[in-house]
Image (tube, rainbow, N blue to C red; front, side, top):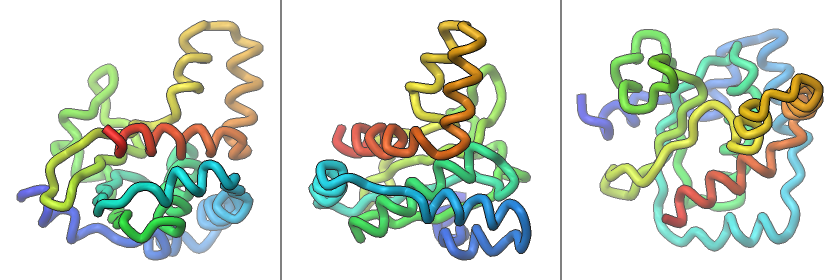
Length: 168
């Protein structure tokens, strides 16, 4: 299946969130509703002036998905050039072959594409700032950063990283 057909089979953010009627849905919407995008970041989002298609591999139960998929949805709300479709990782691992980390397909994986479905980049699992803190190996820093991350305190970092990808 070509990526465009695969993209068309995906669901919207609302359909994705509605896959759960309990804790996961509640947590995802709670994080989504608390996202505050400052004026400079809003302007940066609105400066993207071409269609961007985003194929997302995600699962509603995944903590990283609960944080980063809402960040992507916020971008789409500030700029209608972004079209998002979400597919399950389960059963689609073969499509994630090029995006594996340490041999494993990680979620969420966002694949950013031009209007003709040419890939321009990918965001995998977490923002780089969290990966960098984890890489340093200081347990206290990691615990504090992860706690803040899970509360949504690094969502603006996710948004900035996404904007860097689509500006390439």
